[in-house]
Length: 337
Image (cartoon, rainbow, N blue to C red; front, side):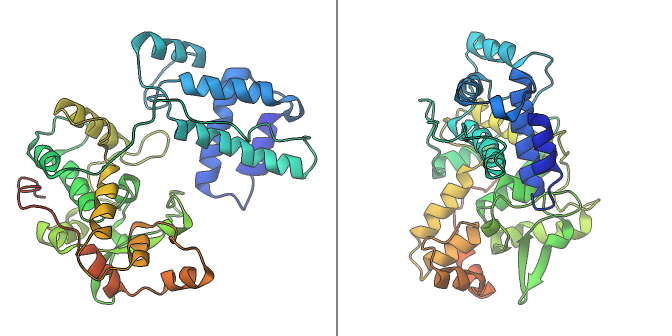
């Protein structure tokens, strides 16, 4: 049965990461909700295709709000209300998790083929995310924060860190006090797995150190280590039922950008685009591999030499890279910690 395969080959596996277990369990649970449990040997292309089609029709907010509706009812609600549906990337992620499970089953000859591969995930709804413009950043910085679930100072702290580091929202929200350390006498954020919660960076390259920009130090980021209660560096954030710290901030940010008239192409992730674009166009001697290392990207040129070099980049070179991030004086004039 599929539920048994999930437990045996993923949930009980000592080799699967916490993220793999959580994501695979979510994909399997969605399949079970839609079609019920069944022997893995009879789940073929017809069911895989039906599951793919169903995923594309589900609202993007699925799992972010309490609901007693069936998946079919959720899909019908999305159609009736014209709601945004799951992106091709989200559908692909669910299918890839099932494909990885089926690869294990196929290797053990428990199934004859893998029906989860070879699918297309374009749904015509893809929005290309882009960098912020100076005008949009000024608009954001001057906007009033209306969320009742996330304090205004928390929103500003997280936003400034994203703007001056290119870190992902999840990486910022899960920073612990011990993740702020001096490395070679340079204050740094350490992005690394947290065994106590099971959180880990999205990729192997995501485990890294990010020197703290001088603008963040001026804004008082270093003082959070001594003034914040609890283990986390950023206060005022709850952990969702799905185990995500900062999910409420992500939702509130989306509401804010809609309220102030920012386009769909601008999301919180746009800070990473902005930082990446700035650094690659910087009029300084910054190497591509330094940027990759700072942002937690896989090396642009994946040779053994490059991989080895990435691990040996000095903290001073990373600091030089992060200090190349700059904005106009008005961009964050009203955004202080």
